[in-house]
Image (cartoon, rainbow, N blue to C red):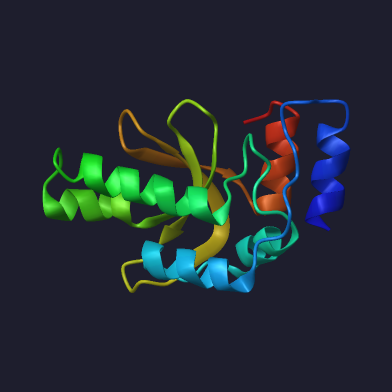
Length: 145
């Protein structure tokens, strides 16, 4: 489903390339590092393509972005503020400008898959941009987000 959708949207563009599927072992490893269970739709996306070298992050890139945010931003925020504004998100795509598309993680540790948000790095603010991953992919590749 995702390969087909993305393939149609990037057809004719040389800047985005579907990658091979992500092995289950790598998905579990990424979840473990991030500390939150990925929503099923994100796992399904990774099972079909491990990123697109442009917008969608691979499992390794998800880990790298979380690691970078945790190392750098923890220094600038109080622990409670860091937890609320930085650490309670599952980032899985990027706009290339330092902002990430993500899921929120609820205070109980459950990942909320009811909406996709953009996490804006300058102000640590989030706003809803899509109802699910297919909606986000379509909006992104049609320059609507």
